[in-house]
Image (cartoon, rainbow, N blue to C red; front, side, top):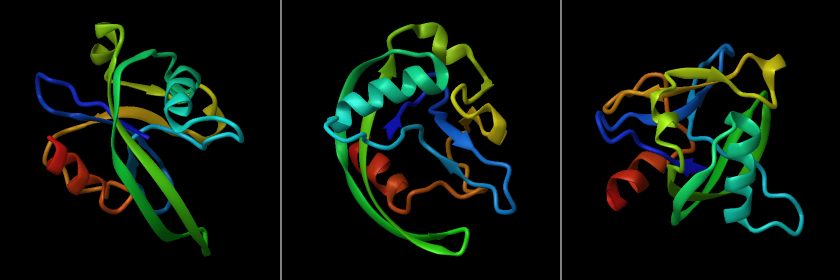
Length: 132
């Protein structure tokens, strides 16, 4: 996943879900076999919102164990900081995720200091704050 913050207000770009328990999550996706995590970030941002990234750098790695739809899950998340290559990307307030329009998920700017709905994965807020 990649952390993108808008400089003017420190809002964080997130995907939001409309399920029974809404939550936010920085954008990203699954690493495909034979693909490096940094390449995944570039591919996913193109697929999900049609944006290219620049200044991509690794912030850290989070191991996350959680329940999703009643099933235990385990993920290893590479968290990058990045910027939009095209500054116009910061002006888009929200948009549907292009490669999953049937789910109703969308991308939006989460205001700085927001605590509800929760931001996942656990530990990502602390990682963002520690690497400022």
